[in-house]
Figure 1 (cartoon, rainbow, N blue to C red):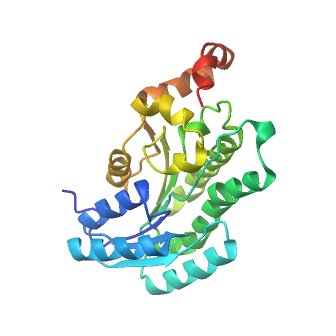
Figure 2: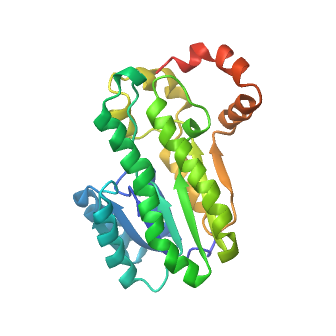
Length: 264
């Protein structure tokens, strides 16, 4: 097992379940010290106790709603005071609601952008000064294949992930002179409780269940890439091939894929 993460300080948002909790366990197994952030402090407390017992690493947990930028500033300020360095930030918090554009409620639109985009940017902004001072670090943003291929009923969610990819790509170029890595993770559908909110009727999950990724698989890909100059990770690979075809032949792709895209 790689020693690259041993004694490193890793911050993960959205860490109380799904790929966030899976990443936390893998990082702890590899000897990293963790700061885990999420809205559910009860789940965070349980995860902290489990990881400290199993791996004898330091695990600090804080309740945080990343859509509240004042809260982001307060929590991160407290965290950064206690850390000598920040080696990795994983912006994992996010959610989606699958509805056609005319059905999208303004509060839901604002909520998705507040968490998926503004919250991600706010968390990143808090760690950048320390990483720049160190001359090292790694920002990992959990984006989505939806940020590359927009499909029906995901117009708002796709828009947030397009924004994340644009931000990530710009940030990568800005931070290269500081030797800070920036990576985008673009998974397809993952078998987590994400779809409890995103797919209320269960139609999408039923149609794509056989293609859904396991959270442990995605988490391992992310953790394996930590502190390496990985530009992006696309999962599954065949789905990313579709995004390349889409970029080259968008009209043909939309026409041929219409039936599949409308399975949500």
